[in-house]
Length: 255
Image (tube, rainbow, N blue to C red; front, side, top):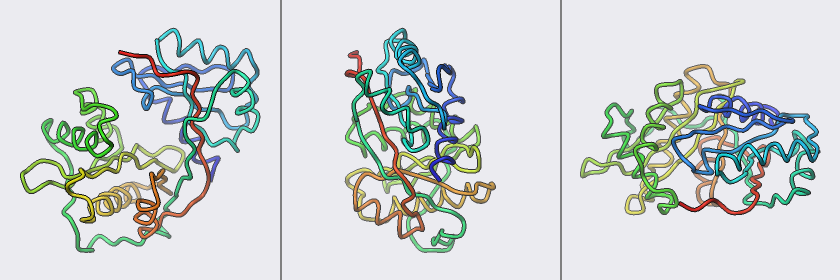
């Protein structure tokens, strides 16, 4: 599954407004934001980058004032990690990823639980962006650009789903990117602190997974943030299949 997930990562970054490919690396940039979660690179499976290739990748980030950063499955290009570490890249995070297929999905469409909705209006996309930022501790503040990216996800073949709060706002939500090479990434599963423990993450994850399977995806993958969330995903049919490594060089630019 590593190759499938890594090929997806390459295809996904090639959808960015700006793409730079150099020496076995693919970097995707969005000029609307400096967020390292949006502007990063990955590795072409089987590539063997050397010092000059890594230097060219670093330059592509530096000339844009961005943090050099990569996300990739290291087993798909074993020569890449040593070359990057030799240039000073260090581990930001390492994640186990989970995969669900139509054959392992356990959630049916008639299960009781929170009502999951499809966003339709600009106000709903803005509210989802704000709810997800709150769910993740406001590490990245809510913004018009964030809401616009959610809308683009929905409009360009992916999907965004949310559960409405009693006051009409958003209690929680998530998104899934448009499929590529048969798979897609489910991301941003978040619930506002005051609404946790009510099955919102499970309901949204199940709805998004069913949606992309209905569109022909062969699998869905995601990364989880702790044992509690992993148990939620495993109950829905997600299973551990590999590791992804995040490497960075230096610290994120200020401002």
